[in-house]
Image 1 (cartoon, rainbow, N blue to C red):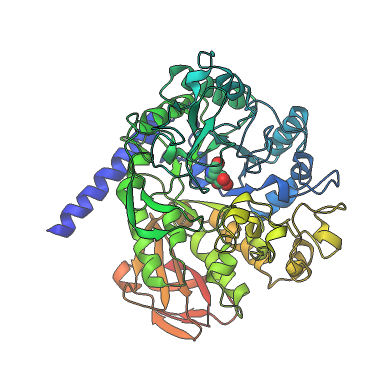
Image 2: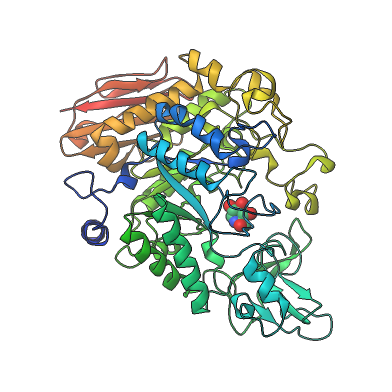
Length: 567
Ligand code: NOJ
């Protein structure tokens, strides 16, 4: 009975989803008869622009550099690039402190360079997604400079200003996620302003309709310039309790910055966030654009809330739940995949980004890292949903954190040293070839190039059929051309297997089986084909010593088998 109810619920959810996708996306052409949108079949690729390709050899990547690499991205199998902030910025948080939302930072080029990038990308059918930093601006943005100038300035209420509790005391106990109080005193007006991140990143006051209008205008401005969507930064923290209740303190422990650990009930995920998301979505729908959200959800109910009722908020709330599985555990992955697969919107899968240790190190055992990198590619690129890759993941780039405090660039690495070394390690220059500076720049790169560029780089891996890069290309090609991988349902098989993660993807008559050995020993197992209406599996893509015979698959250590199912 329980099963019937849950199947019925799943059917209703998917029926509602199909209806709402069809209804809400009128301006965007569906790519198939089922009403799928382009972003549901797309592979996204995050570019951290400082570190991707440096065309003018000043040590920092730029837009012209990205344009020069579009053919590489196309050949890899990328459909959309998400460029981390490239707007004018004092670069305190490397672009996540925006001082002008409608321009390009000279370090990255000009608006004309952006236009060239957009038109060259369009020629190759690659969509451009920009990073919209909606929670805060830079303290050097003209809005904040005016806001700060007097108690009665036109923009005073564009940010969160409050009197202190008492002399020298901030308005309440909220701490910044980057360390210290979340309030900074402005001696000129004797009030504090609120900043969830660095003090140079004051939070915008989204309760002020003028802020909403201005930000919606920014959104439109970029759509008109050819942008296909946004990744929305830090949406969890858009609103704060207007009565400024103190957060509860969770126990006696301290975080890496020496601050108390707070339960952020009063400054995170307030219900008003959803009004803003619905507003941003309405504008996005006018342009057939996609909204990806930086959403640090801790369970599926929170994730569902971000899709919105009837899927009217984020198209792709980024599912970091997947990255919380920090070991090669079929049991854990199975659990996360099943819950995300049953969520009320289209799944998104991310295994690395500019704030997280790279997947190469998270899952690698130090000996079989390349095999494990291929295994992870075979996993998240064959699931039902849209994957978001991170530059360099496809060549097996390694997290390389600084070893000395004086070398740290990311400010949180300096305040939190040695517990928190910052995020430099996952932002090192892209490794294009084995020449000096990995072909990233002829100048001195802003972060050192890891020594692994000699073995892991695009040029050499392109010539090696067994490289991580060539494996990525094969999986990406398969997922773009195989109907079951694009649209098929996900069904877990061998659900109690603690070593091999395996599943079917079935779309009408097409079926694919994926079997991933997450252990260091060879494994054999049944593919449960008969139970699922199939008889055998024909190799589509597999690692060297992995194969299937009838219903049985043999997998080498960390081996992958992806097979087409026959009836
Ligand atoms: C999330 C971004 O991913 C991170 O890099 C940044 O520091 C914070 N938001 C603040 O914008």
